Amino acid sequence: MNQSTPLRLSELAKLFLKQGIIGFGGPAAHIAMMEEEVVEKRKWISREHFLDLIGATNLIPGPNSTEMAIHVGYSYAGIPGLIVAGICFILPAVLITTLFAWIYTTFGTLSALQPLLYGIKPAVLAVIIGALWRLGKKAFKNTQLLLIAFGVIPLLILGINEAFALLLGGILGMFWLQANRDRKNPPNQTVQMIIAGLNLSAIWKSSVAVAAQTVGTVTPSIWQLGLFFLKVGTVLFGSGYVLIAFLEGELVNQYGWLTQQQLLDAIAIGQFTPGPILSTSSFIGYVIAGFPGAIVATIGIFLPSFLFVAMINPLIPKLRQSSWASSFLDAVNVSAVALMGYVTLQLARNIFLQTKFGLPVDLIALLISGMALIAVIRFRINAAFLVMGGAILGWLFSIFTVPIS
Image (tube, rainbow, N blue to C red; front, top):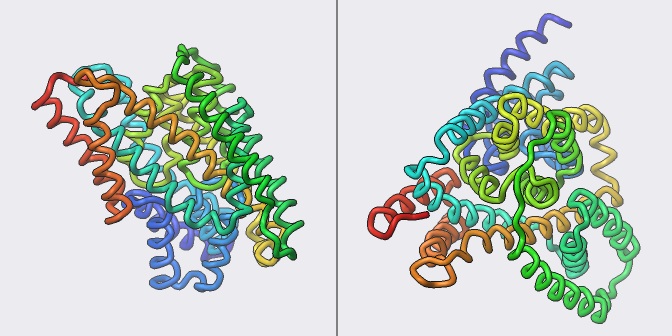
C-alpha cells in the first residue's frame, strides 16, 4: 500500500459518510451530489469517466447510487477504496433504519402511532407511483419495450418467481430487440391484442384471488433470511423500489415471513431515512429476526453490488459499446417497471379498499395520496417531506374524525 492510499481512504470515508447522512431525495439526488463533490470540487475523476460509471451501474443489478459510490471508491483508491466508500455510504442509513425498526417493534402496536402510520402509507404509495411514472417515461422508448413489460405481468400473476420473471423478461426481450434492431416494422397488432387480453384477464383473476388471501407469519432461520436477501441483491434491476415487489411477492405471499401490514409499515418508515432505499432490508431483517436478522439482511442485499462493481469496473469501455448489453438493459428495465406496477396495484388495493364511514373505499387515504401524488409529480417535493406531511395529516384526521383503526 503506497503512502497516498491511507490519505485517499480517509478522504473517501469522510465524503461518503457525509453523503450517507445527508443523502435524502433518492438515487438521482445522491448521484448529483456525488458529481458535484468528486468531479467539480475534488476533481478525483473526469466528467466523462463519471458518465461511464453511471452507464455501468445500469448494466448490473443493485442500487444505482450505492454502486456509484463503490465505483468512485474503486476508481480513486482501488479495492480498499471500493470497500471504504461503499460501507461509509450505506452505514448511516442502515443504522438509522435499524433504530426505527427497534422503535417500531417496541412501540408499533401502541394506538398512539396508528394515526401517523395511517397518513404515511398513502403518502408513500404516491412516492412509489411517482418513481414508477419517472422510470416508465424513461424505460418505454418504443412499443416493443411496452409489449415486453406487458408480457411479464402474466408471469407474476400466474405465480412465477419475481426474480425469474425479471431475468426471463430481460433475456427474451434482449433477443427480440436484437432480432428487430435492423428492422423498421412495428410489432404485429395481433401480438399486441393477445398480450393486452392476457393481462386484463390475469389481473382480474389476481384481484379476486388476492382479495380473499390471508397469510400468517412464520419465522425463518437466519440462513434462510440471509440467502433470500442475497438472491434479491443479485437480481435487483431497475430501481430500489423494485425491492418492494420482491418483499410483497415472496416474504408476504409465498413464505409468510411478513404480513402485508408490516410491509406497508416498513416502506413507510423506511422513507424517513437518508441514503439507499435498500436499507429497508435492515428494517425488515430486524422485524423478522432482531439484530441478527438486520445484519444478515443488510449484508445479503448489498454484498452483490460490491462484487459486481469489482468485476465490471475494468470492463466499462467494452460494455458501453455492446449492443447486446444495451438491449438486455432496455428489456430488464421495462420488466422491472412492470414488476413495480403490478405490486403497486396490490398495495393500493390494501390501502384504499377499506370500509370507512360506511363507504367501501377509504376517502381520507385517497385524499392524502392524491395530494402527495400532485406534490411529487408536479412539484417534485422530497419524499421525506411527503412522509412527514402524511403523518401530520393522519394525526389531524384522527383528531377531527372517529378514531383510526
